[in-house]
Length: 247
Image (cartoon, rainbow, N blue to C red; front, side, top):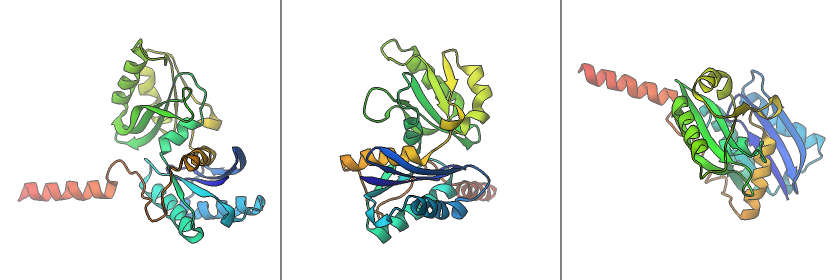
């Protein structure tokens, strides 16, 4: 079973090929280039280097959000275009779940947080030791960072739960670290550099599991999970509200 993974939900652009539980290739870039410049050339490169025939793929796993509106749209369009051209199924991988998968085996709560601006994060908490893939403990949401941290404290403080420490990863960490250090009174740590951002290898690996379970969708069906309206849409509504208020 061979799966192509695509990750573009943040500044990170990443593509990978996983085959029968093995990582064949991964190309990850986190450096000031738009995904429209990087994704297709990166796919071309790993396909060429691994001598992969795209027609032999069994499916395409796409990091489906939440995240950057532009990044998600570009990744979605890339996956849909390949899926349509190759007649391959898509595996819709929640971005935060893919991030949590990178820290599989951690015996506490895995807490990916992505910077959503305005003091918010896209955040969730996952059990990454009890099952065959990450299990959502705190549902993924666009949420105030302090509110999210309070939820993690409640889970850790609950004597009936097995998780007594936290690990944070994602681009919400550098922005939110002062708040995390201020609010938390339980054991926590931050993921190291090689696991603290999104990676397509995790998306592809989860995609292989999804494919085995039959959890797939067609290219026509796929839409990203934005979690909230875009900045342009918010600004339009705010402008309309001001105009209506002045009338």
